[in-house]
Image (cartoon, rainbow, N blue to C red):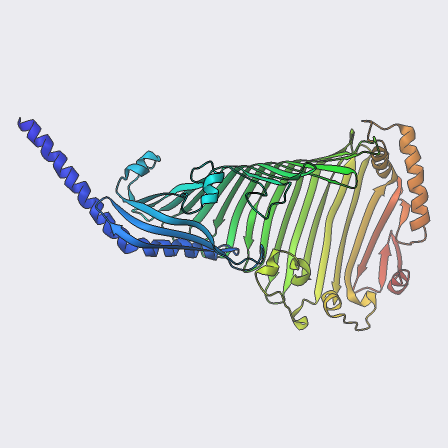
Length: 516
């Protein structure tokens, strides 16, 4: 009997303690809800330049274990990037229940076992959007939950149902078109530092069929964004398992396929900084022409594209680099080889780089001519193409002044070309054997190998064309002492009146007069 009384007493104490904690939590929610929502929306809005997020609530009714409220979540465009429609996009506009901690049953049911200050579950109802409700199979198109821990860890998880749209559902879709979206899963997390926000999203499929001959399909998209603390920089990582496009025009159909597409890096919208690394594991292009039986299949394996750009705010100049490579290009049955390009640039006016890109929408790109950089440098560190016959290598450096003035203002100070160039260096090594191997393979895609006769036939034509078009150009020679090909080795510097050309010396005036 005594044990029973003790047990009942303990249970009662725990129950009253939990009720008290829950009531206290309800008071904390009431006091801090607006602050938490404001911090979250401010962080979301300041780290992207497309939408403004707004979250509001009213008609709050606080109870012991929960608080009922009316919640409204909307998006509006910051600038007219997508279209001319500035209407509000309503994501949620309905009643919601906020469950008090420390251990809401709904949080435990979702696998969250750490103490929670508040937990909110929501779903778009038929009342909010009858069309989406119907398209989602008479159930919520968007559902999810949000939680705030006692340590101010904030998390939002959203999930959508798959939908299929036709012209009868949405006027903007053409009469013969079908839009099919798979299931989105989105996770937003904010640590106790208000500037530490991360977003992860995944989509299993996305299909747009314009008609039977034109379509786009995407499978397994994964995205993550993480704004860097106390900066305008966003780190991102995007992965797509497969992306396919097909189109038809003038009796010809083209299929393009991407497999294993990844891109990651960071971008700073405010300071015009961009740094990313992209890779496509396999890219295929197939063209089928009704009037021809020729092989029209191209396959690129492990295509890499890395780029970095940075704006110097003092002179509106853009410095950067570009690297691209491909492990192999298969044309028909022929392996054409592999290649790479490594390029640096410095001192380019930002309008020439960013004009026409997304940054046009984010800031005023108007510059003043007097602020432009005096010198512009373009450096090709190395271009290489390799096949079974050998390598083609090209590199050059061009350091020229007044280039931005000429391009942007039409200024012509009367300077000769040699007065504008501070440095020009060029080295070309292109053996005829390598070029002949490439073109012979290109002309015979139906075979996996080329014969010696096919290579020699193409080589003769290349040598004849080189002599015809480049024979009178003094910077090129057709033998480097080891093999035949197109070769050039040039060095021009500002502090010398002489130019080194393929081991010989000539006056700078004579050299530039040859190109007038």
